[in-house]
Image 1 (tube, helix red, strand yellow):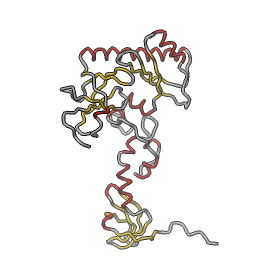
Image 2 (cartoon, rainbow, N blue to C red):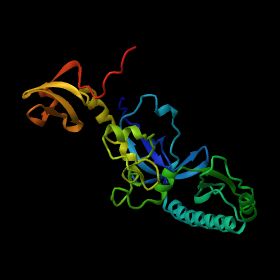
Image 3 (cartoon, rainbow, N blue to C red):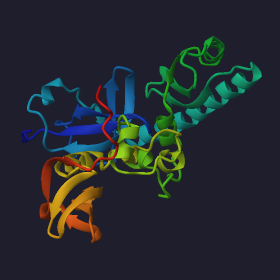
Length: 289
């Protein structure tokens, strides 16, 4: 990464559950985080919030980015509020039509108007693999909003939890996804096992009914440290004699060793020596034929 003078790159978010996108704002002055800007995107004109101002970036990044059109004016912000009301209106009409027509298999979450009012993205969630049919809702929208192009986009359960926010499964007043997670990472049960976390579903499942994102926070640290520690059941030499490793404490870089006539003792990893190729026999070796 190389810092470039007189170049201002902004990270901008257009949606509560959207990703951040980069834009060139070198021609603008007095831009700060949390300001709103107007920019032309592949989906038309949009108003987004500045989430970060980059001071270091790839030297070739500037030439690949679109320019911010302008900092949002008071009139732009008022228009955004009006669009928010229109978004609620179109969601309510879609939900009412869904109930009236007895349409199943999906749930409308929210709608996002383009700032130029030429298009609207309706976000929904569905448990089915197949895409639901939206012909009836499309007809409703075309009839009431003839100049508006509607697009339906499916979002996942983590995005739904991010949109609604609320109390985290761990008790925090705001869910991590609502506060700072911009892009969801793949989470696996292996992450919980390596960190020796209880596999009880209530302990590792978030409000979205998926594995908690926080399982990824310290996973790489555990994974790297565990590589440096002896395995459970390995025989090691300690200051108090030879013993068997019965447990490890990765973040403290400690091991618990069961020593004959001494019982279980805790040692720093630096205090013990591994005895290569010597492990405690847990199961008898099968008879050879």
